[in-house]
Image 1 (cartoon, rainbow, N blue to C red):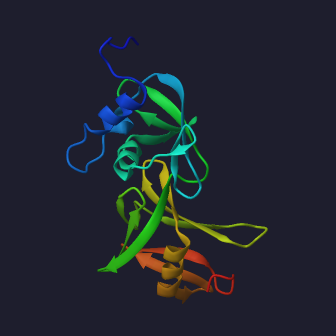
Image 2: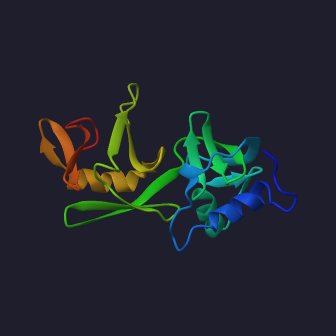
Length: 188
């Protein structure tokens, strides 16, 4: 595929593609099938910090912009535009669920990049437990194949809201039940 000479590439193209979504909507990255152009030195650290060439990206607006063109493909995480695909590295999950509220039987999460996600059948909560340490590792589906690690304080809020059902701590949202772990597993 040839790219017009006046087309932007790299970070400039990613930023321009992200601005193509009206309002706070998301660009249709699932419809874009660009050629893989290589890697870009962006890392999303385990704590949610975005780095470019080992320096933190200090502008939250820029991180939000990049997060809207993030996608996870079978070959890994990438930033995509209609004309290029650049691989990035993600140490854990790309987002953090940093707040939760509850209204009308729905748990509404806010991520560190400003996404608002209602837990339910389309956006499940999953909790894996480390077999050695027994530590829970909770996550929330955000979009596509992108997940948010539920921050520890938010997870504790979920535990406080949970009910015991069949020997497990369970929260409900949007008519769905999500197990947080067994009672007495160090999370209650």
